Image 1: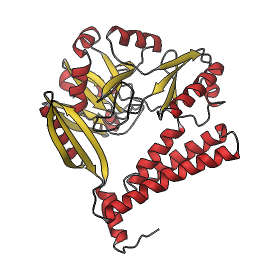
Image 2: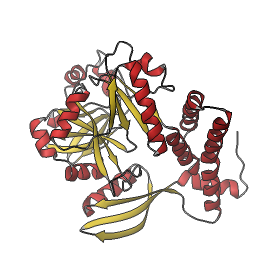
Image 3: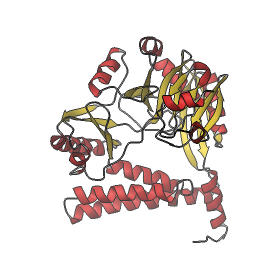
Image 4: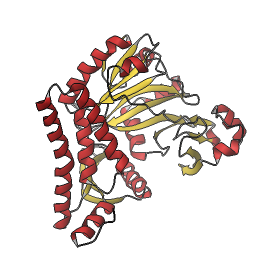
Length: 376
């Protein structure tokens, strides 16, 4: 592998390729060796993949900063920007779909190839036509819906799962298409996209974003992503319902998520409440909702462990039997414990309900219920 050549192609900020590639991890996928950057280093994004024998680089997706208040957050972040586009932020599984040696693969944020999402993307999207016309592009997409092995969220009109493309980038440079060009390109290939709520100058985008957030919050949706028209600058903002849902998840499996995960959600909701709580009664209502999201799921989990019930995330997936078997192998390779709860055939598909067992939470709760102590 010519590491210096790849260092230059990645535009790394170090002159020594060893400084960069010591942070890459070697993995084998479908007979090919992939070099994956496991953490951002030297100006190169986490999840960046180099596939030497196919001479392909799949750039990692950039981290999107978050604003905690819409006003003046939007105007401050987009100072000097003429137009801001407000799109829905979807609650799904984020992947980059790229052609590697002519074969479409779906890469996770951390650079793994997800066999399930790869199979579903090939089935749901006309990838052959797209990559024939745009071989060096990468589709940045979310796998969404109630039947996925990762995030399960109900979306109107989606009974099982679907894919939404929210960005199209150059694989090697990571340069994005403009929002208008990307939306037109996706329409040409009939790729689903997130809703667009409007485009305006930064000062006017505050009102558009606030109205969108109110509607999304009422519907239990995640939030919005605001982008400059050229796609280069992005910032996100999430709803109160999303904050509560994520806290409820964290406290339903209290020893799986770290304290930073929990604290960051509380901080977000505090700033949102400070900006939008109209009066003291509304603030107390928000506090009540937040407290329920924290306490009730954890009590339910403790009671489940006490009577020997399993705990963990429950999912349903459907698709080609071989693809599902590859999925379960992939999840087990990530050191996850999988329990199959139901396995059937439906209209030619294999449909499996399974649980990702929360071993750490189960074992620690059992320890405390049995009289164990906790050091604090």
